[in-house]
Image (cartoon, rainbow, N blue to C red):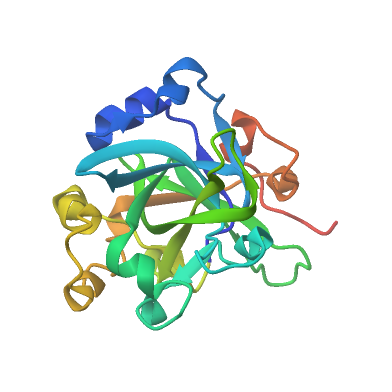
Length: 240
């Protein structure tokens, strides 16, 4: 799974990198770098709407349109690539509402022989560019609360698609986020493209040589900790 990542590239740079229009509220109020992004937080999301590629912040944890309670999203931070076209929560957005979730790196926890505690590992691209995680998005309408015009309040949410790991990540974990290369971004984001069979062929492990990894401090275990020191290489954990 992918349950924690780093988002440190400013939104205007992300918009330029992904060729997306930047949401107005991000221009006026840029968030500080987040070195410990956790589920249910707002995350930068690249998506297509009205024929325009956009960058905005969505709630991490997909809330299906049919959900009665948005809290269900906390259980839907990831979607398995192998069953994405079958699960009720994901098959509709997979056909029409796919997105990219940028990340500068992500964390996984590795079992260490002879140690009770797991070793957190940080994984990033060797070229320093952002990952383009494949994702899905959805809009949930709160029928019990309305805006000043009487329209239901809306929540835009997303989930990160995970699949089999490449050889590098397999040293740490048995799943990894699906990472999309630039030459498939148009195909993936196109809302008129509902060829789920073809789309599923894109959900493959990224090349091992794309990724570098190193151990980091167990401080990342606590979501309240946030700072550049979290991604710095650290001594391996020890129970001593």
